[in-house]
Image (cartoon, rainbow, N blue to C red; front, side, top):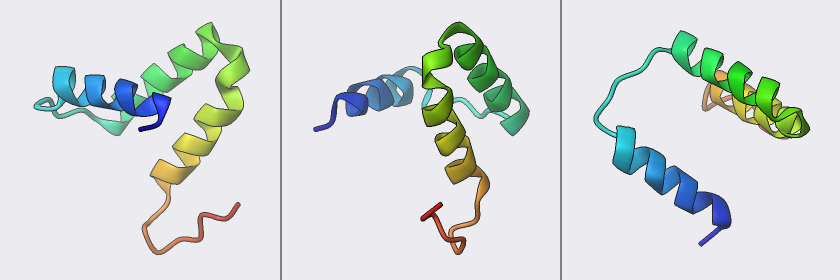
Length: 60
């Protein structure tokens, strides 16, 4: 198990039944980067991954 799996599991346990909008998610990601600028690159990669269709190439 990766360290990040614990955070993902917590997210799923706490908010797994909720439905959210992409606008809400984008806002939360911006808030996170504002508070933690050292993670800007990782958040950018995650946002790009989530934005792309499954058929898109993820090698960028």
